[in-house]
Image (cartoon, rainbow over all chains, first blue to last red; front, side, top):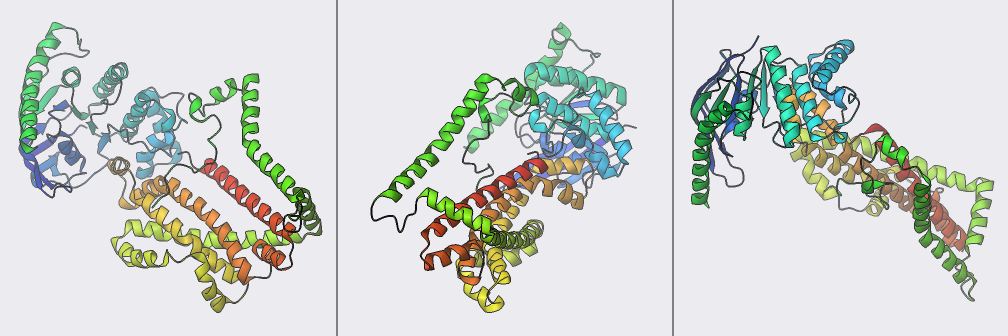
Length: 263
Length: 284
């Protein structure tokens, strides 16, 4: 079962610890992520897209408005929303299988069940043969495979991804994008994917939401009508990138102007 | 407060950064050739050069006129150590010192780690303990000895008390710093995998702090080995500390020097053992 996420008049304010000033990160955001869709969230740096993702994860509190999942307000983090981090966030004292198993241990599964699921998840993301390696022995791409497998082992209806491929080289990124798509297509899972890259958003997303410079609002939402697998060299792909890129560029310039005004 | 998270080593780990993919079994096997052996012998020669030179200088100095009574040569010191080994006297002192150092270290380790973890988790505990810790910490281990003798008299308990006082704070503060500096993303990852606060503590905070805790324990172990000798010089009738002080009083520089050599080697062995144990149980 996939889940629907709804933000109504969602506002987030926090106090910058260094300056003591209040920052308005999200300003009355109205937005719905449909069940089973792959939604890419793009926006200039500091626009609040990661904050939004963290709020969906339950790691950040809602200041005003509502944020619900299948109609129920999000009160805190939970195993129904798996998360993949840009920094991988692997437990360095656990090997690959032990990392993947973490959520299953929390669920209190038997050792046999845990190992079966963890090995299947490792296999699914191409970690076969690396089950007993420690994170420090893995490349960035392999680390992120572990991150993805760890989230998927819990079989969450919602997968939250915070610029998961930003730190990877181009080839590895493309490979992981493709694998992620095949994992999503089979599973009827709602994916919220934050990225800086327009190309990545157009390649992966069923829809693309572009956020404004801070305070973050949803500027436009663009439907990507292309079938998977998408060809990034095709003319239609380029045509789709244009409006996304134009909208993003406008906001990046705005963000730069306001940054200069502050300085 | 932590003395850096890196190991304090006198020599780089074998191979170290020179070797690509150090630690992988393949790389280790590939390097095990004749060239590798020669490189190792060379490294060994470089490491032994200064100690051998010092021993040679010592031997020469001991032969110069007028010095002989206060500076017995290496051979004389070795002979004395050998005799004391055969008679079993050396063993009695070493065993006594090790026993006390170990007892004090274990007590300080349990209390220090527990208190450090508690302080990292609870604002209240932190506020209660932080002041006393900062007040007691600067009191050097030697300053605890008079109180220890008043309370426990001469003997085992006094020495253990002094060792605990001398090494508990470094354990506590390293534990606290390590448990406070857990990577926020690791905690968030655990939360999104469904972990409760209690599970975050046992499955993320404690293992994540382990390298810092181990570092504190290792520094404290060296401190315990130093502390036991200081305490034994005053508050006991056996142990290596007592042995060298008595030898000084009875004018036996050979025993004093021999005792110091044993102290150095035992300290070295303890550190080596600790590192070997640490490598076995942590993978970070």
